Each structure stands twice: as structure tokens, then as C-alpha cells.
Image (cartoon, rainbow, N blue to C red; front, side):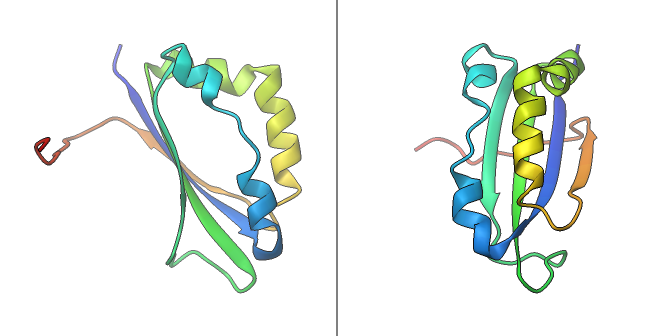
Length: 108
């Protein structure tokens, strides 16, 4: 089964951004190989960002689409999601899909 690529733009209240960054969630899933990659990126610029909002991009590559559903149904994620909602005055922007192509710079 093919990997799934998920990108979520989280719209976090600027005055709660540091507190939000301290919420950890993905160590278990990456350690078990269910998430091949997981990164949280603080946006220096976002066309989606409103006044008083700090946008973050959450990018996750899952081992397969089942890993995505496994994570979403995990009680630990549901608890995390409930806590994270308190930081989000706007709903997140969510996309997921399949890789069309990828380019990487050679290792030096």
C-alpha cells in the first residue's frame, strides 16, 4: 500500500504559539514506523494567516492510509486534538493525497 502525504495548516492564536509548540504528539508513531516523517513548521509567511494568528504547517508522511486512520482513532490523539483546539480560533486547513513526484538534493 502506498504512503499517504498529509499537510495541515494550523491557525494558532499568536499569544498562545509558544504554549502550542510544547504539545508533543508524534514520537510514538514515528518510533513504530507508522509515520515515516512528521514535521511541524512555524510559518514566517502564510497567505492564509489572519491578524493575531500564527500559522503552522504540519506535514506527515504515513506508512499507508491505515496509519492515518489508526492515528485519528487513537485515544491519545483525540485527547491531544481536544487540547490543541483551545489554541485555534480558526479551523485548520487540511489536505492529504498521494505523491506525484519528489526531488531531493544529493547528500554531501
